[in-house]
Length: 174
Image (cartoon, rainbow, N blue to C red; front, side):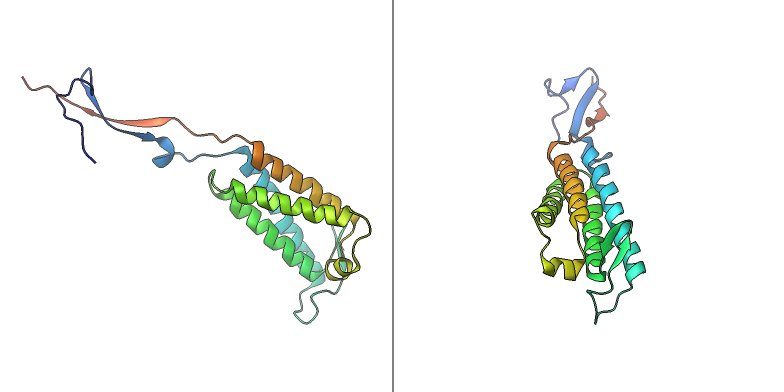
């Protein structure tokens, strides 16, 4: 990095010379978005719901489709509980990165909406009912939460602090 000549009149501002100017996010404060709060809340909800379902159903690798248990009025199997934990953790990870992983949040929201629409599009397929114990109620949960996360990832503003100027005081030589 080359520094400007201290006698160059274009860089002199009174008795100060601008040495370096860069966005504050590179030095002090990161960017953030309200989408991060929404994604974090949804991720925590699904992770806790999945952990509660695993606690209720147990986990046996020989029987990942049974037993079926109702947790917070949503039916679960151990496999579905693990899927919810993974979904929640991915959403949390996408939310804690400052301003960076909104694309992943949007993708997870779109996947949740698509999954919910599959569950709502008529009779729930027998395989999904056997593997995951899902119902229309589960479909509505995923459509609503997925749509909120997707919409937040798309339209939520990103807040960035201003720039930070590093100034060196120059004393003119007589």
